[in-house]
Amino acid sequence: MKMLSFLGESPTKALQNAQKECGPDAVVISTKKISSNGKDSVNMYEITVALEEEYDNNKKISKQQVVHNQTKSQTQSVDAQFYDFRAEITHMQESLSRVQKTLWEPKSQLYDLIIPPEFIDIYTLFEENEFDPEMTYSIMKKTIEQLPVAMKSNPEKIKNFFKLILRRVIAIKHEVPLRVHQRKVMMFVGPTGVGKTTTISKLAARYAYKLGINYKVGIITLDSFRVGAVEQLRAYTNIMRLPLEVVKKPEELSEAIMRLKDCHYILIDTAGGSQYDMDKIELINQYQQNATETPIEKMLVMPSNVKTTDLYEIYNSYSTLHIHNLIFTKLDETISYGNLISFAHKTKKSICYLSVGQNVPDDLHEASSEYLIDCFMNKKHSS
Image (tube, rainbow, N blue to C red):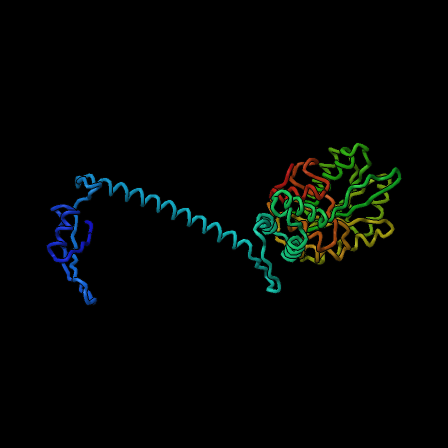
């Protein structure tokens, strides 16, 4: 129903005006006098009528058509309003999400940093890869200050810039071929279950058969505690036709090394244990102290699928052995690689090799910054 008002000098005149405009079916709702304060003004009357039917261009439209058209119009209007409303809500949610990502919320309240929208994707990668928060803050702050404005609008250039920064951060110890009469002795230490024995088998096969030089390789095991440890190594050395020495006492290590004096590489396996079992770590120290005439490079073998705090706990316990370099295993069992990069950087230890599975000798890579950055950017290891 539609309400309309009409004026007239008398109620009758006002009604005539209403009927003239709306027809005889207009229903009178109210009539009131509109007084004027002017001296020569004429009082007017206002009449309000209600229409039950719509008129278009002075032609009467049936009530059914009006209802149909009104219903159709209202439906279209509601649909349009609902669509706009939903789109607006979605837009607001996306905006709030992006704003939330830009807020730097470190554990320490000393930092406060707003991440620009163009850096959000990279910043998210750093967080998902469990990159050290302090290093993330430092890298983001310097990049925000130093990255040329022209590069900030190009996502690919931003990604390449961060790759360059990571390349400078990652500490890598590259494999160097041995000279004819050169010998290298390597001792592998680390907690139980990290994959030391399997890693040694992979490296033995690599040095003996995969480098194109066919170095002579010998293996020594100090692990006479774990059931099946010697048998596992013996099975690998028999397949590869490599000599194996089993040492049960610290004073026997020097003699075992002498028996393998013709080998270019001598790989020493040690007994694993908890990083909190300091007695076993001290026993390893006694072994190396009985072979001081031979330089021994200590390799700390660590799993990549543990928390960053666990990595530091392992390192702190084994650092008494004067670790030289790092080997990370189980890259195939994680999707975060930032903790490896930041850990190596903060401990100032270089990464030598990366193990990505159980297959001997294939699932082992010489460490490279390009490989780790690829894992970091894609959140998965490549074969």
